[in-house]
Length: 113
Image 1 (cartoon, rainbow, N blue to C red):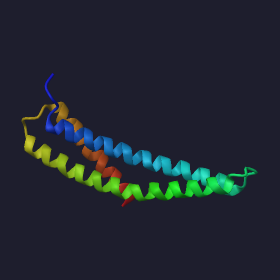
Image 2 (cartoon, rainbow, N blue to C red; image 1 turned 30 degrees about the horizontal axis):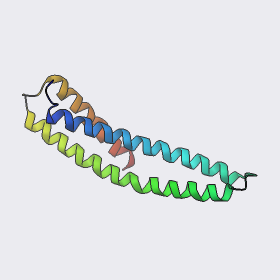
Image 3 (cartoon, helix red, strand yellow; image 1 turned 180 degrees about the vertical axis):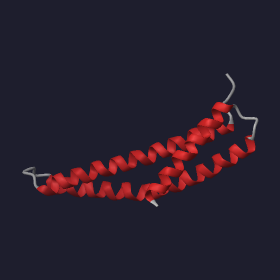
Image 4 (cartoon, rainbow, N blue to C red; image 1 turned 120 degrees about the horizontal axis):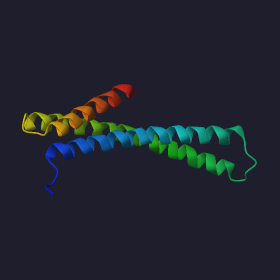
């Protein structure tokens, strides 16, 4: 089996980064829900400690998201360059996947802008 083309590698990298960014947003929502639950009150002796831990985790998640966005921007640029380099030589399936990944990445970047 031949190794994947540069276009396929760049496409899969961008798709992975977009999924990673979405998972950080999901994690952030879950952390916020747990914080609200802990703030609402609990009879647990460790509630204060748990609240502090959840808040720290939330802040760490918030600091990672801009880094992932920068990586998405870089990967998007690289994929667009690979697409231009490949021109008409790339298989149609790879070009379609690359274009879909580009659209998804642009939509993701536009959501938070």
